[in-house]
Image (cartoon, rainbow, N blue to C red; front, top):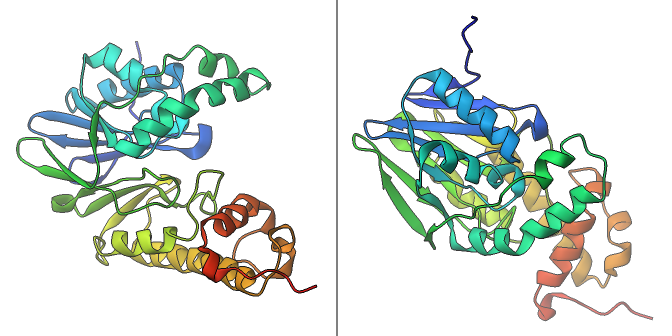
Amino acid sequence: MSRVVSPFREVGDRVWVARHDWFDVNVTLVGGERGLLLVDTHGSGAAAREVVADVRALGAGDVVGVVNTHWHFDHTFGNAEVRAAYGEVPITAHEQAAAELAAGAEEIRERYAAGDDPHRDDVLATTVVGPDDLFSSVRVLDLGDRAVELLHPGRGHTAGDLVVNVADAGVLLAGDLVEESGPPSLGRDSWPMEWPLTLDLVLDLVTPGTVVVPGHGAPVDRDFVTLQRDDLGVVAETIRDLASRGIPVTEALGAAEWPFEASLLADAVRRGYEHLPRSQKRLPLV
């Protein structure tokens, strides 16, 4: 019988990352003498069962806690299967992420039920379990011989993003506040006017030698995060400029040059206009 080889690869002392084809999403393990912390659990029960098999193949210990970096289903829908494998381990997340998952899970099911995605049946068969160990600003998790810091640096990709700082290993898990396999996902629940400032706080935790694990794609460095922050800053300031000049939101995408493909920014522009205070908006001249 052939031995199963785990896809987890060590990127720092006892920090392993597995990069999965579906969504190019990263699932990460942080090891300590008390056991393993699993950061994000993938997008369905079936996918999470594979994650559990990969954790066991790694042979580094049992999962004693779960962290969800934000509410989106590709990071949370595996929670129930991890508990089925390891018992009632705490699932830690920002309080807003828990609220958004509770509100948004059914919409995800409806979207998959109406489509023909190859993962449709797996998503529909998934039991959704939300996080139950919630915090608002900072939480430190004790793994025995190391402390793992969870920080909510502000709103960005969602209202409830967190980063996981494994300072002694020189690794920071950024969730979808940073993405490597494509441009940042400025979706219907993003906060484009605040995301650059949120990344400023993330960058305060990152040194030139820090390995930054994005929510999707290959690990990156501080320079990559800085460039992505600057591009997001251009998006925010362009929205602010257009609104201040009275450009209607319906015309904004075609009225400027953007650092990302304009077709990806419809939600960002709409959300940006909504979030700007009235003092920064002008009515178009007629």
